Length: 108
Image (tube, rainbow, N blue to C red; front, side):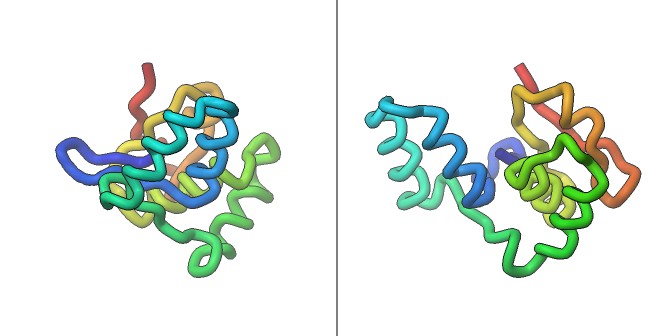
């Protein structure tokens, strides 16, 4: 997910879907995420329809990257002051936005 401090949280639909999948049978947690979207506290930003060419270029460049990761890098380019919240430090420290800039990360 991409977030700036004291501002709404943004993510992509594919990452939202991944989060729901990872929550598995934790139905109350999934319903909280859905409520956050309904209340506009979690904003789902489309990436593939408008920036599919950039996401595809990233996927070609980074063989370990999945579609969710690519969508977050694109989102980071669209919102350069935002930070990516991730536990996947190994991959996200390798990825670059704007072709050579490290991603701003928040990780536990």
